[in-house]
Amino acid sequence: MTATLRVLVIDDEAPIRRFLRVALEAEGLGVIEAATARDGIAATARETPALVVLDLGLPDADGLSVLQDIRGWSQVPVLILSVRADEAGKVAALDAGAQDYVVKPFGIKEFLARVRSLLRDRGTDPVPAVLTVGPLQIDAANHSASLSGAPLHLTRREFDLLWMLASHRGRLVTQEMILRTLWGPAHSEDSQYLRVYIRQLRQKLQDDASNPRFIFTEPGLGYRIADD
Image: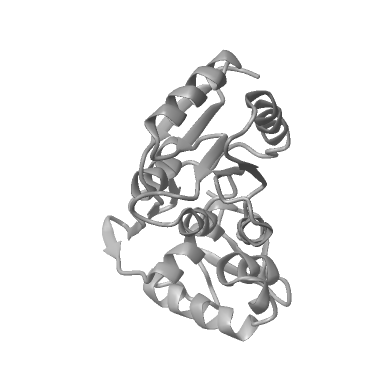
């Protein structure tokens, strides 16, 4: 591992954060800390960590909602760290997009082995927190977007859709992938539902579907956003 890889620890217990910092830094990793859901989400977008360690019992929101928020715009690996040991809780976290689940109290050697495994398998480099596509700028930390400097008034779902397309800039994102990620597996075939949101996004981007600048349709497959 190299010092360029950073792990974000989202946990409201300061002793746990200190303990994990010492262990992770001993592995040559950088460590970022957040004590609340709000700060954790902002740090994920701003710092683009290679891995997020997420406690489910946060003071301002349930950790599952944090995971769902992050999954709206990022595929950063997430390791859940929680006192909740019931099978249903583990399944819910994994179904929501977590890659692994460790129950407190835990052995540090096992924890670090899981961290190493997730960092090896993380696949691609983190997506920057601010993406630019020509005159379009999208800021994940603030859930905001602007076109030629003018703010775009997007709903939360419209923003999540735009961010997902932009974070795969130039590449096809299938309808099923979008629907599963943003709406859940139960909506994986609701292509008409997705088309409504694409149409709304295009209107706000002043993007002509017949001659697009930003969002291109791959008929029967999905969508891709322009690559500068």
